[in-house]
Length: 237
Image (cartoon, rainbow, N blue to C red; front, top):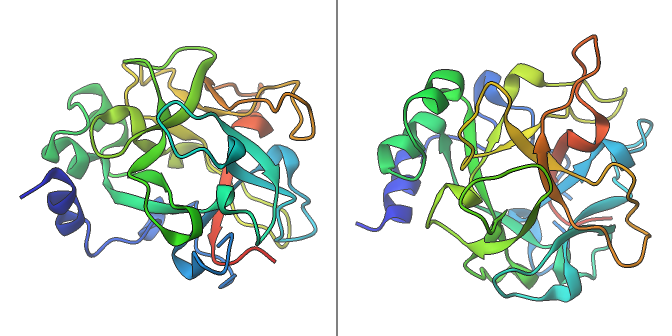
């Protein structure tokens, strides 16, 4: 049985945010393009979210719709006519399940996050799976490691862990936000998480590319806005 088949079987009873582990939740039945439909997941950053609405102004995007290894991951204006914003959940399960299947390491990772949900985010323009997932090119993440498309289901570099210990509430009408830890990291006391460049803006040219950075928190424990993420499924409105 292939790795992906084993993982899908192991995670068959889980949702993206099973039980208390869930911060990235299925919201209104709205995916980027109609072709992708309800299977698509739309990731957005707290940094660019309006707390008074559930509609994100900017969502995860593949630069110039390029379905190839190394293509940069950016944020772009939300649209239901842009296939570059079509992503699906390729694999999902707990960290322990990913470790048992051999895609994540055991030890410190499972000790810290064993029961948390881990998942792969696959680029699926117009609903067609590309076999490429959001990940990092290097063997392990570091500060300012660029986030790009990489082959799905091959290594921990394309696996993201929901850091439920640092869930932050959204606004009155928004979903909770959570940091996403790259599964290829080795220091889980100070994990490397998905980060939008601190001084960047999606309207900048060239478009800022997402990176990994050490988790940053204010003195009261709140994670920086550019490291907090949420998601919903469906067609963008």
